[in-house]
Image (cartoon, rainbow, N blue to C red; front, side, top):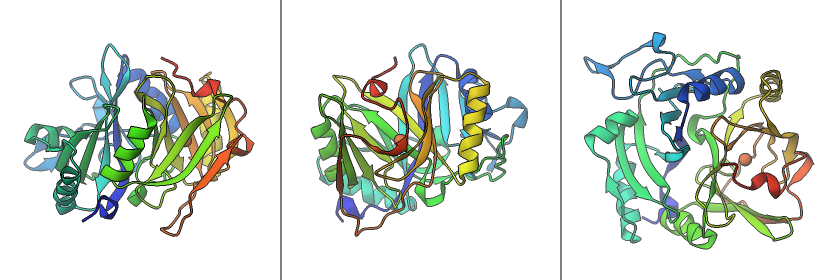
Length: 318
Ligand SMILES: [Fe+2]
């Protein structure tokens, strides 16, 4: 088995640190249209998923769990003095695939280990492996998440997830070349496109592990690691427009108004989330196949709009 044969089901979940998880919960639900989790990973009664609607998605330890489809949760916001990325999970097709993939990744020289019972319970998954990417981000491979159904967006939004995952995450990496080696040669991602912009020729590399144009993108801006933005994909343009209306009515700082990206054709807007990094809400992202030919874009990444989304906007906000 080669890394490119690993059967991914996309970016499965994201765990971030934030000073105020309740503020994040309110932003995620009232603006983005996610809903508070009905219950929490690890909490089982008689083997069944325990439901605690009254908790409003806030677990006893103060972590906010948010859902966007039938997965028990897709976004976890952990209380912390220092905001940042705690981990993200790549979902695999099934439980045996986690062992197969881990063996394959270990054969590439990566330091990957099986998750402990406590770690699996904390994520609510049947199988879990843990490793670090070349920039030190904690990457988890998992399968068998708890599905508790019952998703109903407080704003009526729908998210395009399923076998494609949450959306995508764009990461700052201090050394983009070694990160590219890690994601392509160790994890088996394919590069869909590459884009340069700004006077210094900064580049973003868009990487896929499913038919979604990208699930992870890499950006080098100085010597930092972390999240540049997190993207949630809706199933309709109306959902995106309504999210923008909600952001404006709550005076959320808008990084970029509506536009359509040239590479993945997503129509989206960007706003500043509660812990510094941006959140993109989009629709109509390209679904591509194995016959995709990588493009290189230079001097601008949009068909129209996305005003303000320039090299300066890609600098870290915290
Ligand atoms: Fe994006």
